[in-house]
Amino acid sequence: MHPDTMRRVDAWVGRPLCFLLSLLNSLQRMLGIRRLPKGFRPRKILFIELSEMGSTILGYGAMKKARELFGAELFFLIFESNAESIRMLDVVSRKNILTIRSSNLFVMAWDTLRVLFQIRRLRIDTVVDMELFSRFTALLSYLSGAKAVSGFYKFHMEGLYRGNFLTHKVQYNPYYHISQSFLALVHALAADPYELPLLKREIKKEEVIRGRIHSTDEQKKAMLKKLQRLNTSITSKSKIIILNPNASELLPLRRWPLAHYQKLAEKLLTLKDTYLVITGIASEKPDAQAICQHVNSDRCIDFIGQTTLRELIDLYEISSLLISNDSGPAHFSSLTDIPSIVLFGPETPLLYGPLSPHCTPVTSNFACSPCVSAFNHRKSACTNNRCLQVISPERIFELVKGKI
Image (cartoon, rainbow, N blue to C red; front, side, top):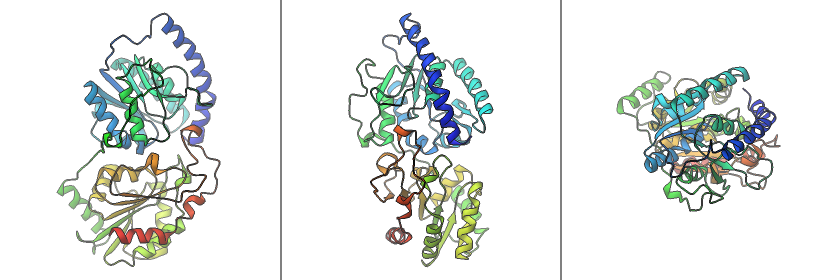
């Protein structure tokens, strides 16, 4: 389903449903039916992060902290199209990963009902809603039947109404990296829920844990052989630079211009024993083909659709550098030690930068950036992402030379 359709449904259906069910929730609390028990301790925690694979990676530390604090069994709810991102983290048991298909409204509605019955059968007692002011996930949290729900609450902010379903209301902090904000949601479950707003303690950057995945020697060799089938000149000593020119349909404004990638590819091929590997999903193949045709070199390899998400990690493990828009793969790379250059425009690395110490974020620092945030449901008025266009291929090439 197109992101704009999701936003409209969330607004026009979500608002009245949140209002009506909030009335019911208030009545239930008055009658003592849904009141949080004194001394409550989570035993089964469901994390909800539906739409952003990168946020799943950034939430790794929060999930680890939940297990550390409460010894609870963890569950995770995500769109089926993004589910591999949580599966490969190996922090939540595969049998505890719940999915909703989002291909169209009817399929999504059916799967939502199915998942709610599943959650009820599992007797989930706690929900951590990682989505930023989504009414859909707020409704899911309430209908799950969980005793405790931690999430971001609007307090006196305008236009972000999502009902009164939260038992642990956390103030969203736009000056914290999102990984720290996710940690705040978990720590809030151990705090006094009536001490508003939560969370009244510092979350230090050092508390954030970076997820890691290590490929075996066999996996690395298999990936190298896969590349060698496309170019026999590649060896284990070759410098492999990955270009990831995509940006999800969720936020196309994050795309760096194709012409910039083409010009950068030209420059990169002037480096000795360097090979370019272009990654992405099948729908992004036209861009990869355009880059390959532009440089007209067998050292530029169209690798679109040639890997699973897990195999992408193997590719990172044998490569020298990743150059990417702000997108899921930039965060997947932080699970390894590959150096990366990540281009930011409508969002800021201060909030959404990959956690890897080997990442170099690049931004133009325009006055209008970031123009998408939690406060506008990630919907910008911008139709011309000049903040990315002004980041020149020459600037990126100079950074590359300093890294390899």
